[in-house]
Amino acid sequence: MSKKWKSRPCADCGVEEGQLHQLGCGVEVCPICGNQFIGCEHYDQLIIGELKLSYGMPYLSVPNMCALCGEQWPEIFSVPDEEWDKYVIPELQNKVSCWECYEEQKKLFPNGWRSLSERK
Ligand SMILES: [Zn+2]
Ligand SMILES: [Zn+2]
Ligand SMILES: [Zn+2]
Image 1 (cartoon, protein in one colour):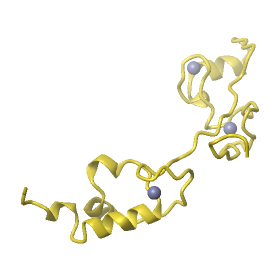
Image 2 (image 1 turned 45 degrees about the vertical axis):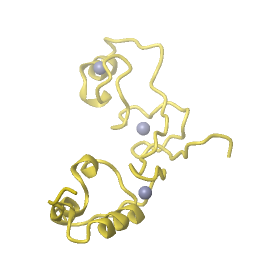
Image 3 (image 1 turned 60 degrees about the vertical axis):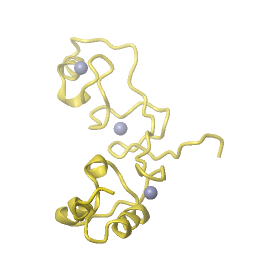
Image 4 (image 1 turned 90 degrees about the horizontal axis):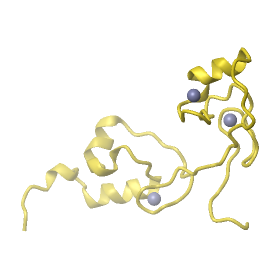
């Protein structure tokens, strides 16, 4: 392995890193406005031929990473919302966590992070 990040094919259209997305891929970002390509006006203009683009948007595999240990592409798991809210501090709640780090957080806060109210 020569590079430091792990690559995956595009989750939607399946191309490999460094290739252009297939036309109509939901992951592709508009090279002009930066929004999702298939939802933006430039895509429509391209399809009807009103817009000529001399380049497309290549796919680069940007890894999902555990916010705590930095593991790339941790296995996806799901826990009930109330459990997530109980053990995961707000700073991390909308980030990715690997299972091991989630378990560590449960050990840190066995009764949930809100159970700590006394400042030393
Ligand atoms: Zn794609
Ligand atoms: Zn656009
Ligand atoms: Zn982790």
